[in-house]
Amino acid sequence: MPAYAFPPGFIWGAATSAYQIEGAVDEDGRGPSIWDRFSHTPGKTRDGHTGDVACDHYHRYQEDVALMADLGLQAYRFSIAWPRVLPQGRGPLNQAGLDFYRRLADALLERGITPYATLYHWDLPVSLEDAGGWPARDTAYAFAEYAGVVAAALGDRIRHWITINEPWCVSMLGYQFGEHAPGRQDMPAAIAASHHALLAHGLGVQAIRAAAPGAEVGIALNFEAAVPASDSPADRDAARYRDGYYNRWFLDPVCGHGYPGDMIADYRAAGYLPRGMHVVRPGDLSTIATPTDFFAFNYYSRVVVAAGPQPWQLRELRLDTPRTGMGWEIYPEGLYKILLRLYSHYSLPRILISENGVSYLDPVAADGRVHDERRIAFLREHLIACHRAIQAGVPLIGYFQWSLLDNYEWAWGYHQRFGLVHVDFATQQRIPKDSFAWYRDVIAANGL
Image 1 (cartoon, rainbow, N blue to C red):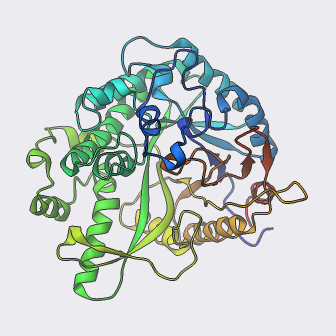
Image 2 (cartoon, rainbow, N blue to C red):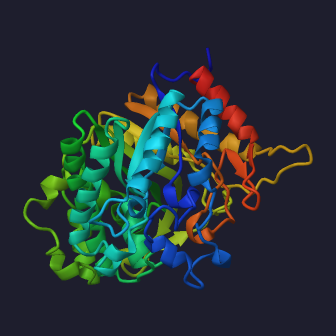
Image 3 (tube, rainbow, N blue to C red):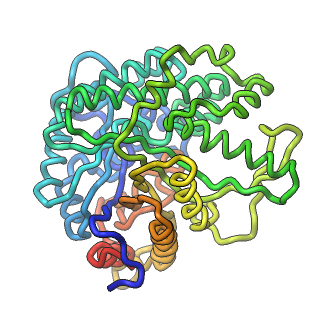
């Protein structure tokens, strides 16, 4: 028996997203996404890198599925590119695009790998952005139509669905900071976008269930552990704000608690609320809180915060602690505490970790292998945190490592590597890393 044995039936998976791996951005009728436009805008991504080719997964998916089978994956989380299925976001269906995901699902099922499909991982069709994007309510309705179309077409093969990936990133990185597509910098628009992304989730859950009875549906939020720099009331209040801004603003409505009152008061004081939150219409909160079959979240790091002049002007501190290639602090204790919180404070019955992983630029060694001991250590520490949480009673049912492949890392381009498999982006050669073999042993043993 492994020292850290996981429960029978625990789901071991890995994850990717469409724009980060597929390539083939102008093939078989795919329309442009906001990331196509953003990445081709000078100065928006490091070295001008784009996802035009990425890992060429669109053409090499059979090779990649074979790698998944060798890894022993029980489940694979991927995303469906909205503009590959509905090139204009609405309207005519692109059958060729839909057929790709049908072939991918069939290839997975043939090898006993359960497909988990994410419907939105940041690749909004440009036509919808030009009509207002996520700050516009109509985008939520367009998403529900898209969700219904895809679930009706693929629901016989795919039973597990995630509606929206990381609505904080969708809204804040895309519309507040402009670091991600579409690159806007407008905080009231970002808050409106956050509401409409959550509304899209609720409408999407309903659309999927109507189109594919028996489907299991959830959402993937991203969390960070917000820690005060000291025990002073001001620093604790800064951590309260950061937790509300990053975690509770999205978690509470999904769990049926509405938007946090303290955050509404802070946003109003800062002048951030879009038209006094009139974007929230009667019935929206109940739609957002439509019950799901599982709850998924992504975790990578924590943030240590100190007070500024106002709660929304807090300072993030960089401690002299171990960091990843992205510069994120390694803090597995945060994963443990978030899992306990989700169970004890929110009573969530079935929890999935939909992303957890680390970027390191480990080279191909002289022996032709990639020796990524730091990744193995990172994954081991975080899986031990998962095991501790399960021992404490948390109903954690699965873990998806990010990512199966080195891929296009958004505005970082090809300068970050999260994969269990090294990808030579010039030749598209795949080389399983040492962490690949390690994770295969974990899956086979159902524990560490």
